[in-house]
Amino acid sequence: MSERNSHREILRSSSIIGGASVINILLGLVRTKLAAVLLGPAGVGMIGLLQSVMTTASTASALGFGTVGTRQIAEAAGKEDQAAVAAARRALFWGTTGLAVIGGAAFWLLRDILAVWVLQAPELGAKIGWLAVGVTLSVAAGSQTALLNGLRRIGDLARISVASAVLSTLLSVGALLWLEEVAVLLFVLAAPISSFILGHWFVSRLGGVRAPATPLAQLGQQWRTMGRLGTVFMISGLVVTVGQLAVRTLVQRELGVELLGQFQAAWAIGMTYIGFVLTAMGTDYYPRLTAVIHDRETANRLANEQTEVALLLAGPIFLVMLGLAPWLIDLLYSRAFDDAVIILRWQVLGDVLKVASWPLGFIILAAGDGRTFMLSESAAIGAFVFFTWIGLPVIGVQATGVAFLVMYAVYLPLVYWLGRQRTGFAWERRVLWQFVALLIAAGAVFGSAEISPPVGGVLGVLLSLAFFVYCIVRLGAITNLGGPLRKISAVVESLMMVIRFLRK
Image 1 (cartoon, rainbow, N blue to C red):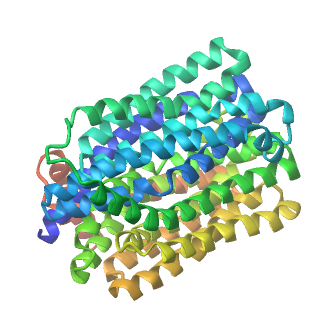
Image 2: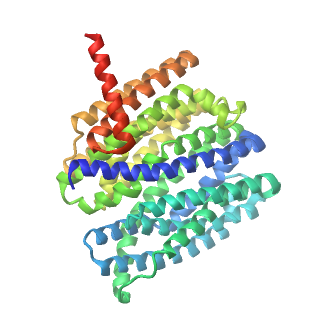
Image 3: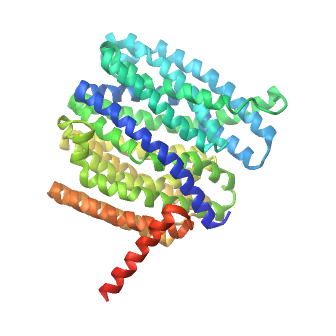
């Protein structure tokens, strides 16, 4: 695939997943706004804590089968080995079915212990036990996503994202408005229920596996591979989710549930607004990289292309988020969440590093080097927890935002070095300059916003528009797209030529 076609493929996948993510984000904002108004910071904090508990249990229960299953299916599909694809599909299905049942049952049995350890509320054991349903469905839905991802069914993944967001919103809103006693619990369960139902429907449309029955010995080999690699990936994911749960627990115990709600508000926005970029990486980039990981030149070119497109697409959003954070928090939540503003700003600075680091982390994943991936993830989340712990008594809940930035300040150079060791990776000069320019612009908006929010807001919008113009011109140049993008790019290029002429 030529460089231009590769850029077009990345942009195409990002636009499909991005469009779905925008709808998902908007619906998520509806859910969040309603929860903030009806439940306040304390209710939002409790939702975040329960979601973290359920995610941690789901990660442990899945045993990394989804991550490895995507890799196995993508690798077999890249070789056009239909028998291997069929074996991987069957192993993924039966393996995750068993893990989903076991994980849900184990969570139910441990419900009273979790109520004491996490919530310090033994009386909530029965309610927490219902999260076992979410654990079971999350593991099952993860296998559905892994299958579609491995087969690169980008359109189906986007449709699942939108449809599950709609269904989840309907269930969440209904729970908040009419089921007051169990509203928080059903709000948390709405997402896994919706994802499983829609994922099952789209996977069923693929039809059965059109290949001879897979011998039990071959299935066993697939399970051993998934178990060996998946356990390491599971530990990596578990370290991350446990770290996030630890931070929430620290905030709750040190500062109370009200300030936990402030953290959760900023975290929810931070994990949502660049989701279209990060989701596209996992959906399109990871399977493509897996197929070419043994070709160093191609793998490195693909990583640079993915980094450039991610920076171009996310850059304008970073800058406007930094500048308009106070107004966005008021709009999406309420004035009771003012403490979330500074947390969000620190997180956005961290997100600049995050977007640059994620393509490098996928190099380790695609290579199947689970141990190295686990160590890099552990180092990063360890920094997050440690700096939160030492910072909370000193600067309060703002410490969570600072720690988030520190986490990716540790992670980025680490995965860059690991990528260089694995494939000889190095950023191309243009990509490096784009990253540095975005980082400097983000720092300028952050600093000015701290001094004067209105000045920061104006600067953020202006720099965002400037970066957006550059994004349009650059994407038009590297993809040679037709249609509206090419026309907009041509107009912008003409205006820039006129400005340069007038300055002479």
